[in-house]
Length: 162
Image (tube, rainbow, N blue to C red; front, side, top):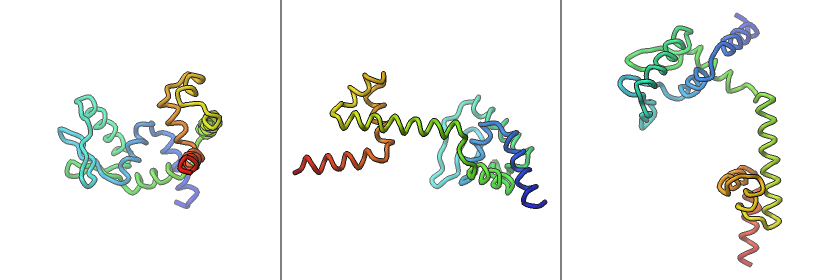
């Protein structure tokens, strides 16, 4: 199989994967998953995930389906990625964001710049939140996502110390 055919094959497989399957595959890139009466990520130290009978059943079903597709293997009560599974995850990681997601990021960044400008004008988080119908904590989170906000805060601290 040449590179172009390999690429097309990966694309076809990815199109047929459900969102939850993609999420599980990405999570397994670094660590296998062990399932018995609980779900454990075999990192160091290992982490046990909150487990209900329903979660175990759903996860088993998803992992069995991924195993049928040749993306994970099961051995000694552990599921781990196969080489094909690793290729799929790498391919998913290399894909650029969708235009819709890209537009959402730009919109959020613009909102954070709007908030920053209002904050520079002297409005508090609460006042900005009231204007936009948000809590002051959400305003703080949005401002924190702005790359210029930390520089602005540092400059404010320096000016206050003088």
